[in-house]
Image (cartoon, rainbow, N blue to C red; front, side, top):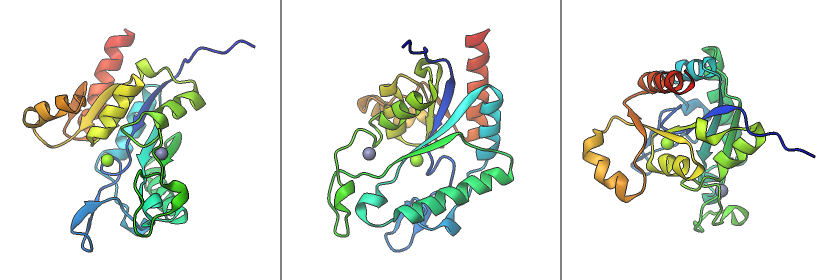
Amino acid sequence: MKTEPPVRRAVFIDRDGTLNELIYSEEHGIVDSPHRAEDVRLVPGAAEFIIGVKALGYLVIVVTNQPGIAKGSLTTDELQRINRRLESLLAQRGARWDELLYCPHHPRMHARGVTEFVAQCDCRKPEPGLILEGARRHAVDLSRSWMVGDGISDVQAGRRAGCRTLLVTRLKIETIERFLSLEEATPDYTATDLFAALRIIRDVTADSSG
Ligand SMILES: [Mg+2]
Ligand SMILES: [Zn+2]
């Protein structure tokens, strides 16, 4: 049996803080991932970004850490409801991802923790496991693909997988550049929002396939 070489390109994209807004939790006094479907709000440009990169020929694969499963603060059912809510908000605007892969693990046991998900896994970003799994399932050429997210661990996972990396952040890059290089997390590109991120991917794709 002959294995086919990877031929497709993909944009791997983070979920929380990149496609959907983070939520301020009064209970914990921090911003966090939504824990209820009714708290899901699209980040401006999320649908336009997905539609735009798909028009360039990319698959869209969402890769997200969901340690709330291991910590016992989120059930698998709640997570599925949140994912379906996000999917339907995007669908209302004509956007659809090809796949969503999540890591349910966390390395440490918490008070209400769920033993089967407490693990030092290879899928929790900054590890590249989710990206590698998505690439395997869809025969993706990682060197022609992107990892897009709002966090350092997104950039690290993308680098480890061999993708181009794009950090979406409103922080001034100069102010965090040194920190990012210490963490081996210097992104190839930065954008202040998903509209700008789409322009970068469009330009680089045009340059590298022309
Ligand atoms: Mg994020
Ligand atoms: Zn994992």
